[in-house]
Length: 259
Length: 228
Image (cartoon, rainbow over all chains, first blue to last red; front, side, top):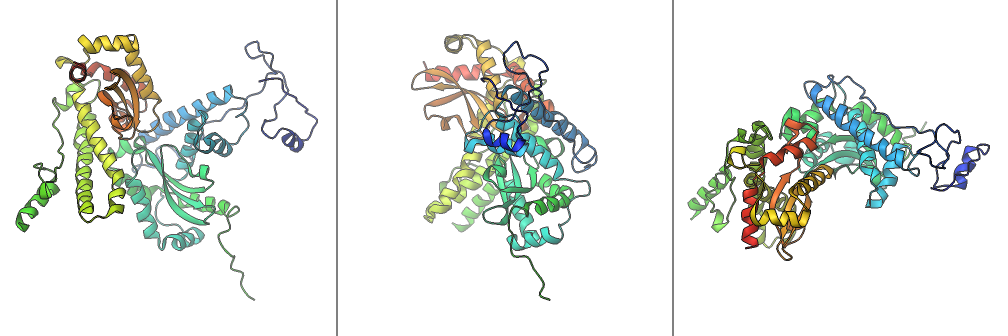
């Protein structure tokens, strides 16, 4: 890929300005790569993030066995695939996962790394969209926003479940905050597509690939979806994601009390 | 007249369609398997075969019939937007019915010839186009493993150029959606429901073992009919 100009004395911000597309490389020499003349580099990898609960914590709604296979083997496989891609390609190295998803989506012409990157992102997000003792209804701001954008929580829940049951093939169902329209919406995506690629902000997701529910529910998507809404979905996670999203999306005038 | 159409309507609703619906509307029925559910073990477990046939394929049949009936009514009312809106459900469920009907026929228990390599014209054509049967098997297995999401991998015959092709289709799209001149000889279902209970996420093992129960006789028959 040609030689790399490395100026370790320049402050990081100017380095980025100088070569906006290239990622600054460390200049420490450690080992030669297959006898090539390139400066060798320190390589960092993505790790498999553990869900914020034990693998059996979602029983009886999602079995330990499902988590063991879905997280321990499938999700782990995506992480390993992602790292293999990153080891090969200098240009991709250094992005955060969010950025990598958006860049590798390449406006609908995805680069080979996209599938692994987005599935790692999707599964990290999915595990965190659930919690033991989940379900019930959201509170405070999240509930207010849902009632504003869907009429009622019941209506939102119906729309969400309907989206899950009318999805053809593999995919995900999302509660997203749409940036331009500045409102919440239910969105279903095919295969591994993620609303990040449309610059929207995901709040909750439900994995509707068969591997997510087949061991526990066989072909009964209806029960799986209802169980998710009633017992698994983490409105706490939704709350913190909404709070963060509000830093990017203006959801309306604040209610400043008149003295 | 009203009583008769009511009775027909009931028959459709039960799913045990006689094949003649409202005003001559033809419906489809779930075909029987030509072997027991457990006959394809250990390549495909009896549990999977039963669920696959009785639940998944049945659902495609039921939903296809429902969609077609709605289509019929929309056509009569000249409700064009509903006609268009129904196309998704018809393609998906109809495709599912078409694909699975072929799938059951292109599998066979070992004692009925499952896994026995093709001879005569199909065997010769495979050697010509792919080099060897092993090369074809490897190609199809690789395409199946690489397929992301849900779909099928096919050995098809291009009836225009009389050539064998390996193709994949997404979701329940039948092979004809790739090109109208394609005729399916063999199809492998790589939706997760086809293997997950037994193989979990080790799709390559499923794609290796399914060849032990592949019914090449069916493929040969179809091939010889198109290329006499």
